Image 1 (cartoon, rainbow, N blue to C red):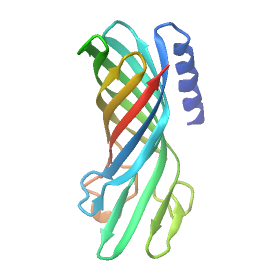
Image 2: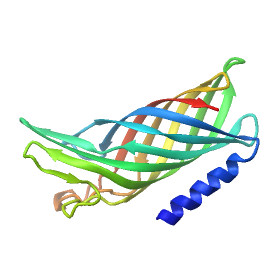
Image 3: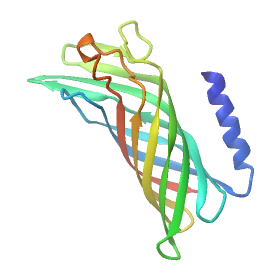
Image 4: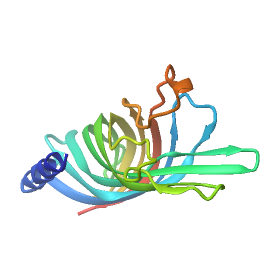
Length: 198
């Protein structure tokens, strides 16, 4: 897995050497949950990282990056509360289409697959249980996730970005109890983000 991440990182750096490629920094607020589970609630979190936009034409570009993102969910039952907050490295691979609204504002629509690699995170509950999501023996989280990412946004002038992004996972990321076997819950995340492009 480390070799895959390094290969993709070197690929992004190589693309950035071309004049059509531009780097950006991005920050966003996440709201994550699991699909098909009535007991879970959305968990606020963050997304932070570097992005790359490689323009093929005035309208079409390839977008990728390395994004640190907190995901997971929370459960509230009566007065009891628990949170699962895994931290992932997200690598999106997106096709983006842009068109001008005005001379200084572009509207952007993008979609494509994403790869996510679990880095860490915590489980906590009101019974004083506290363990690392991917590393401790009691953890049932899988370190790899894959899914589809889509988004809409605007580019303001040459530098400023505002976007709304959604992710839907294809892989059940957690070994749920047997009563959930038919449901196969997946990661689901929505992000409101801003960025600065260099």
